[in-house]
Image 1 (spheres, one colour):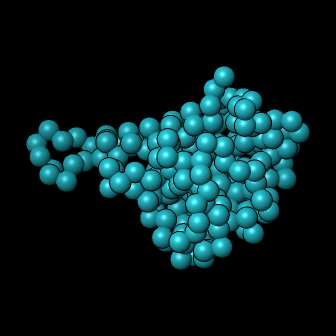
Image 2 (cartoon, rainbow, N blue to C red):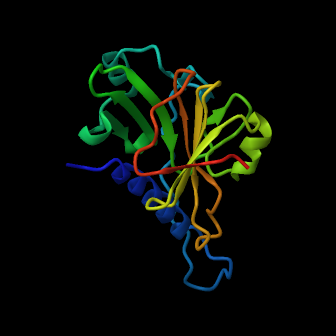
Length: 199
């Protein structure tokens, strides 16, 4: 049975590969920049808390989401978490459903592209303090030590950020690798993670 951390590890792997492909600071001979394929942005790329990511809306049915996002997805069932996850890796898109009801739970983008942005201009790979300045400190957060991430949720807004929590990787430590939207209100506790107090 797959564990939910599989998708987090995949996203962090993509993030690490993208950073590894970037030119080194030395600019030494033999350093080659490998351009990444351009991300496929859905609609306007706007992330509206509690509502949508591009053209994908929380109010849509699964079939409407599949039609809008297109082919090329992978589906995983995480029975122990009660979640079904659809992933469009080329688009950097995750959609999670409640396994029992099939209701859309969270829509999120992940990776290194800055082509998705929130209503307040926050993009992937920005340092988390920028999001905190934009949205305030009315959030709950969970430390997921095994995955080396900090999950920050704004229940009143329906907005969450996945933040890299790995001081051994200073280029990406405390940077946003995932931005998601959900219906405002509490989501279930994050299994395998420890809730920590807000700073």
